[in-house]
Image 1 (cartoon, rainbow, N blue to C red):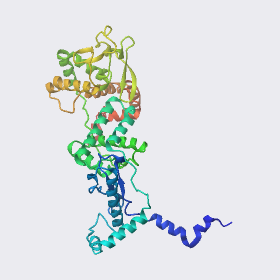
Image 2 (cartoon, rainbow, N blue to C red):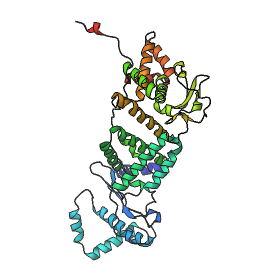
Image 3 (cartoon, rainbow, N blue to C red):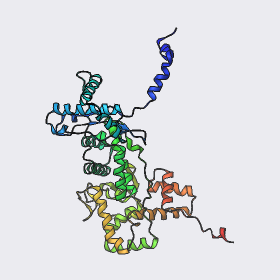
Length: 439
């Protein structure tokens, strides 16, 4: 049985013609009117895209405003923009190319009489636009509204600390758009080129790492907008991550570490206790800042804390640390363990501010006193004592046995993560190999 599908596929090479037409790329999109969803306080305009001869991709052209926004009624603005749109359509059909010199095209048009141009315009308009048809673009959400929507979508997925830095980066990007591209009002007007310009400026003013952090947060926001059908695609994923060499904290030499501890024993015992939680319990500085009195179970020698990679972790408190902790039995469990006034108290400020306080306190009390460079900090004590512990275990154990034992103490979630960390801090060094290279 010869079906209709067979006929259409075979008749006069129709399949080949159809394939040819589908593969042929249009050089421009149909011009559309943006009416700001009827809001007269916003600017209305005509917009279109044209294929960039260098990239081969459709590129959004500058918005066409004309005098439309001088009118105070929706009908008048729409009437003016409809004329602009139809004239633009005709120009594009005649070969107007925003990437080339169109002098010849303009000269050719000027040779026509006014009557011919009017007749041509009316004729093409009646063919292209049936009576009652208005080609107005679907209302597009504003940049501000889109960002607010995206932040709301991300709100429950981020920790308080991450949320603050995330919101600040999005806010800075929004301010940059207002300062540098005030004509951009719709979220659909933000493209890859605009984001690249912003990231390049961040790179010039700060560092590759900060630029990459902005890229990550913007991509996360735009992915949320894509998932919520506010934008078509998250193009920021296609922007490459720059190679960034992070600054590492160095471990202290045994002599310097001992000198620091002896100095703090006399001048700042509370800061010394803070450091010993990093040194003996292998907590990160920010994890120490999160500790409350109730997180320490002295009787059972345990401490509960929020870790980098887990909402709640438990570690033992070694005897060497138990001996250093003052009596907490009469303190309220909800008090912060470390405050500017001493051990156990109220401190109504954000986590980042608490960490910043102890970082600056350490600089004033220790770094300035000992002349230590930027490569040394509170985190350096964690590196110092993990290195010390690992090398001590290695004296009687194989590398695998030593790492397995160490992994339980440090809290690393995998052997691979621990091995990477040990390599970064140069914890494992080879034996003297002089005998191997002697002549």
